[in-house]
Amino acid sequence: MTSLDKPTQDADQTRADDARAVTEAALFQAFGGVRGMVETVLPGLLFVAIFTINKDLHLSAIAALAVSLVLVVVRLARKDTVKHAFSGVFGVAFGVVFAMFTGNAKDFYLPGMLYTLGLALAYIVTTLAGVPLIGLILGPVFKENLSWRTRNPGRKKAYAKASWAWGLILLAKCAILFPLYWWADTAQLGWVLVALKIPPFLLAVYLTWVFLAKAPAPIDVFAEMEAEEQAEKERRAASAAENGEPAGGRHRR
Picture 1: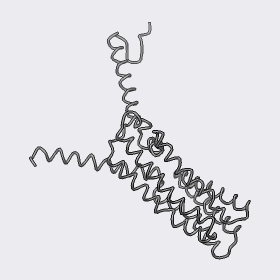
Picture 2 (picture 1 turned 180 degrees about the vertical axis):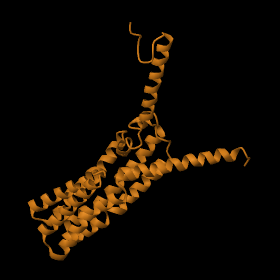
Picture 3 (picture 1 turned 90 degrees about the vertical axis):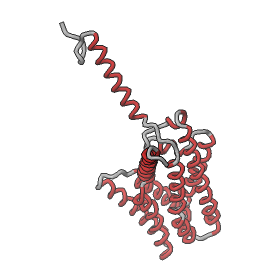
Picture 4 (picture 1 turned 90 degrees about the horizontal axis):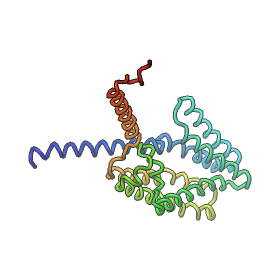
């Protein structure tokens, strides 16, 4: 290695580290981080814990819904983003309504299981259609919107790989849960579902990070638009100067 090669390699390593850091921050923002995971797990954990002890569907459902609402109130009080907490409330509410309607405690989990299956299929179908869902989710977070579809093929390929990972991981989760819905009792299904909340999610997020960290950098379309607006202002100012006009417009007579 020559002395000229080392600065170049150091610069490349710095850019790679920066890309990884940006990817980590974006994934953390998009998927809610540790707090988002806690908010996802806690209502279901409370439901199955109470039901395991006293077999009371109403008490278990009310407790799960109550803790979901408390999580939203805490976020609102702290002026944090509430999308993850709100999604948790809606998911728990659907489960509560469905279980109360059927009288079967296992049905508390069914809407969430159907949502997981639908999401798995959405990841796979959108990838086959050339518009991988993970790209639609993360594009705005990276400020690239849909530029990756036509202007950044390496990044589109990474999004496709990540979407395949999400789809297959969620399908594998469904392959475990749906047989248990028919064969296991409520407590068994609930504990397995709680156990499968975080590990598949972390695996999918990790694989997404791996694919995107190796992909080309995102194209910041917002920065491009700002640059175009600034260039247009400069062109107008230059044109006005050539015509002997003030920067704010024509001379008044």
